Amino acid sequence: MKAAAAGLAAPYAFSQAPNIATAPLGDNLYLLTGAGANVIARTGAEGVVMVDGGLAQNAAALAQAVAALPNSGPVRTLFNTHWHPEQTGSNEKLGLAGATIIAQENTRLWLQQNITWPWNGQKFKKLPKIAQPNKTFYDTGTLDSEVRYGYIPDAAHTDGDLYVYFPRQNVLAVGDAACGQGWPVIDWWTGGWIGGIVGGLQRIQSVVSKDGNRDTKIVPAQGPVLSVDDIAAQAEMYGAIFDRLVQMLNKGRGPSEAVEAKPAKEYEAKMGNPDEFIRRAFESQWAYLSPDA
Ligand SMILES: [Zn+2]
Image (cartoon, rainbow, N blue to C red; front, top):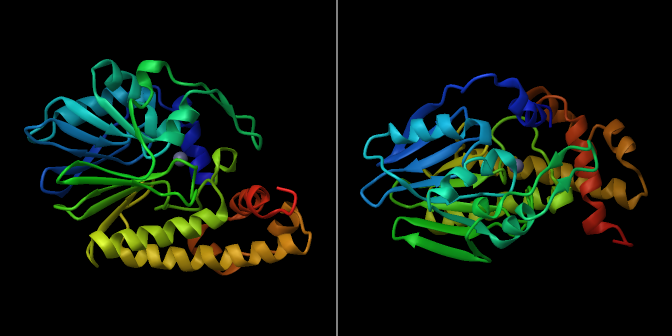
C-alpha cells in the first residue's frame, strides 16, 4: 500500500516530464517504465498496440518514447487493464487520435462516473467520452493472431481486470492483478478483494499453462517482470494470509484487530510493513463474505 500510495501521489511530484525508460521484451515488443505504471508497446507495420497508458501528465512523454521505438508508427490500439489513472492517462490523447481503446465492460462503467475512495477520500473524475474505452468485452477476445486478451473475473484488484497475452514473445501483461513490488492496493470500492488476489493469481497460472510455458514473462502494472515461479509463490503467500483473515472475520474480529494479529508476519522482512494492506484486505472481505453482505 505504501508504494502504491506514493504512486498515486506522483501526479503532484513531477514538475516536468519524467524520463521514460524502454527495455525489449521480444520481437517488436517493449516495456516502457516511468510513466506511472508499466506500459507495453508492440510496434510493426499495422501500427502500435499498447497495454496501459501511464498517468495523464506523462502521456506526452510516453507518446514520444513510443514514437522513438524501432518500427514504430501511430498507436492504433490501447488496452486498459483496469480503470485506475496509472492505466488510463493516455486515453484522451489516443482517443482523440482515433485509437481503439479496449477494456472489460466494468472498466468502461467505472470510467463513466466520479469515484471517491472511502478509506482516504481520494477522488477520481470520470473521463470525457472521447477518452472512454470504445471497444469493450465480457470474457475473451483476439485482436490479431499475435494478441489475445481476456477478463480476470476474480476481482483481484478491481472488477474489470484484464490480461493481454502476446504468444510470439510469450509475454503476459496482467495489470495490477499481480504486483511486482510491495503489497498491492486492494480497491474494494470498485470490486477488488483479498480472495480475488488469490483467485487472480491462480487464473494467471492457468492462462500460462494453457497459452504459455515455464518461460512466460509476466508483466505486472508495478515493479519488475515476474516469472511463473514468482506468481506461484505469490499465490501461496496470499492464500495463507487470506485463510487467516477469513478465520478472523468468522470470529467477529475487526480490521484493527486483524492488523494487530500480524497475519503476514513471516513475509514482512521481504515485503515491508503490511498494515495498510491487511486493513484493506480485511475490509475487502465484507462485501464478499459477511453474512449480511
Ligand atoms: Zn490499479
